[in-house]
Image 1 (tube, rainbow over the protein chains, first blue to last red):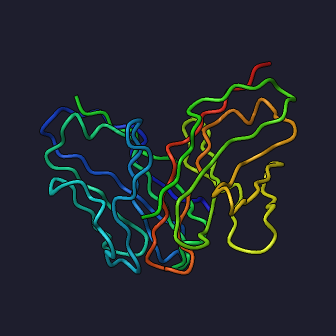
Image 2 (cartoon, rainbow over the protein chains, first blue to last red):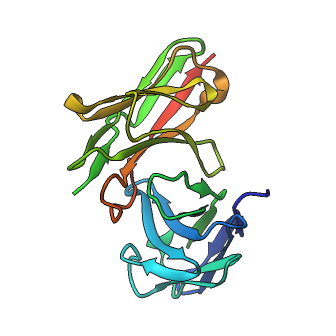
Image 3 (tube, each protein chain N blue to C red):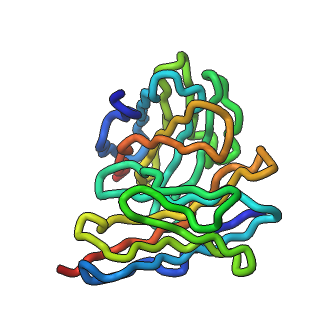
Length: 115
Length: 115
């Protein structure tokens, strides 16, 4: 298995632009998570999906952030408009079933820089 | 509310020396406890986890961790580090009997290895 795939690996954009981050979970994994990693706040859970349905988006920082999962093999995290404080590494992770004791399998991350 | 603290932001050890990374948690019951490792430019990978049973847990890459309920600690150890162990290490807590308790990650400890 190729593992969790994220694209792009690096994104540099200017303030005010729309940014779309993409994730392909491991096949057969029903749960998908989006995290944001910054020096100040560490690794934060933004949102997670079960069978393509958003379950908990309480970690999404504000309305500029949105996430979708149109099918079992693809999810997007969109920031519109982007701001410099959104600069971070964004990780996608997946796990086969609902149990917070399960190992989460992380993608390599997307490093976002907003100028 | 659950929380996890990694008191050391950076740790430097010599290759071949022993290692202990500290982790303290706050949780109302026995939680799931995890250690993940993040190598440069990569996503997080699970080293080991604990929920119940033997309080000394063996993981991959020669790591182990010991759960000490009285100290609310879950420290990670390795008897002899290798240069390839240079990475960032994250302790995490979550799950347990309350399935609504999402995983929370510590802010990480960056391990530097001296040749």
